[in-house]
Length: 304
Image (cartoon, rainbow, N blue to C red):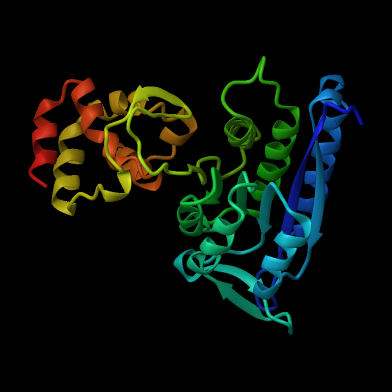
């Protein structure tokens, strides 16, 4: 290996407990390995980044912390089932279902946040946990809905291929952002169901003053978006009155086309609002509405 190269470690935690639908987890991991190997053959990559994978199967909650400490990963990939707020599905010592909530894992990941760059939760309804992990981790990918096995496998393979093949002189965004967009579009190209289900969350900084988002060069408000909450009444008024202006708002926030297509017909404004909520970016809404000339809606926000 070239002395100028660096190593990124991927820790795969896989679980398919008894009594849950069988998933093709081994195929998913094999596809990830093949994708990394395929990208590694590219000549330019021999001088940049290489990847190592460690697999932990039939993972139980008690094994997670030791697996992280032993392998020292930069990326954690969970493959299995998710159940929304109930938690991710791990296994107990007998192979039975063991739910682990995001709250239980959040502090553990925070302990290693200086070195864990990305967590990918390839499980149904795992964006619930993704929102919690993003308090500490720079990038978290989760699923906002149920996702077909074939889609999950395809997303994982394309994500890691793009991550390994990333070239800053050619590819837009950061490596994780590019890999996420590349994988989402690959799902759509192959006409698989669920290209709008993966959600990328970015860590919210302690203060947003004079900062910009990774994919949007517009300055944010001088606020901590964790403190921004609007009533259901205000949300209803804003979304009802946005009508066609939701597209201008989506342009402002650089919401990708595949994400917009996932918004329900007639409720696209609600889709934009929820997109902002998921990314803790509602604090930017006032500036965005000002920018698109909707001062009337800014006044409604101030009535909150």
